[in-house]
Image (cartoon, rainbow, N blue to C red; front, top):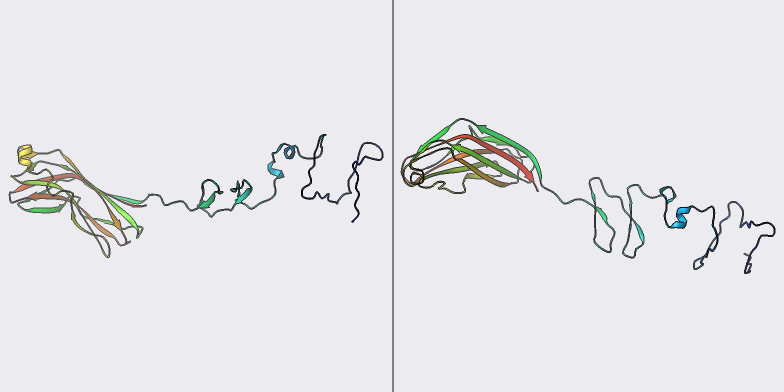
Length: 250
């Protein structure tokens, strides 16, 4: 390879100077600085102003995203999988595609309603169906939660001393849930004859509870009224009872 050392190259005639012929490459080694004090033509304006148009960028991989590493150098963020989202890795690292954290989701909802009046008389304690039969609820997942919402209106109540009422739930599932007469308080409106003069009606009661489920076997769910007594006869009446069951996952 020949080497020419000169301080300046001028055209022999005219004002145009040609370097190489078509197909040649002009190689500029590392450490060389090109200082331009004149006008450059034939080079995209975007390259001279620090901006690159889309059609002037190098080809890449479909789905990749350009970012910068901790040193400020451009890097390509690898394409993620379907359903993944771009997630920040914090300062000093490019983002990555990652599977999003699980969010709460409702899988199914079922409702059972009974408009009819249901009465119960006892001198002890009884749990009795107020929703015109049990609901059969089949979970879609073996790792979910079963949210039960039971509500009912009260009709006339007649009772003696040391009596009360409330709502309760029972759930039965082969190889899974086994809940019998779940109740938040066994007393409800305790000693109602004193509080209401022995007669009361028009009240609404609600019971809400979520149960962890680990099976797809059908669950028998019974919405119940609780008639509580410590020996005196009491008659309670529920009407317009509603049982809403919702399966949800975290």
